[in-house]
Amino acid sequence: MDIYHEEHGNGAGRPVVLVHGALSGIGTSFGTILPSLAKTRRVIAVELQAHGHTPDVDRPLTVESFATDVIALLDRLGVERVDVFGWSMGAAVALRLGTDHADRVGRLVLASVSFDDAGLHPGLLDGIQDLQPEHLHGSEFHEEYLRTAPDPAGWANLVTKMKVLDANLPRWTPEQIRALCAPTMIVLGDADIVQPEHAVAMFRLLGGAVPGDLTGVPACRLAILPGTTHTGIPYRAGWLAPMIDEFLDEG
Image (tube, rainbow, N blue to C red; front, side, top):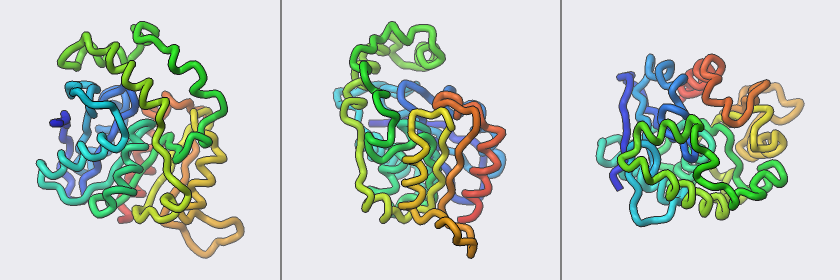
């Protein structure tokens, strides 16, 4: 699986890999923030199986295979260790890289991530299996797909495969989150698909600040963006870019 990637910037530090959301691509996930991040670092933006410029293959879409594909790309590029910034499905891929390929990951930025189904707002996925490809015609995701996909007629198959992934979301145990080695920044919109309580619980598992403990700044971060929906996060570059730069520069 030879996934499409773009490289931007030429910073001397550890590269940062950008992993997009479901049905999205580099443009709709990172179009506003990528130029800011590339000012000071090397950015490797990927497009996963069946998304954007990357063709589909006869294989289900899973977070585990996505993570393996990213590692294979890094091997081909001769890149040993990276930071990873993922949004939505891409955040799950980034988390899987952190737990299953810890030696290849420096720092993680996880935007709109949950480590189990309970982290999502109740009923969020009710009716997802009734979603039809044409329901998304005219959306920014569909328009990007038509511009970039090797086979623009593959949209229906992508949506069908994504519904299977949504019915089998990846899960991690609290113990796996607690054992994560990579310093991690969690990003959430206050009107996101993930419940704020879940993000705070994950922050605590990662060793986040304990109430009343003012002795130091923890290695992990939690950023909840005001007035921001799930699909609004990619447009908060003005807030996110400086926070991410500061966080990544610390290690």
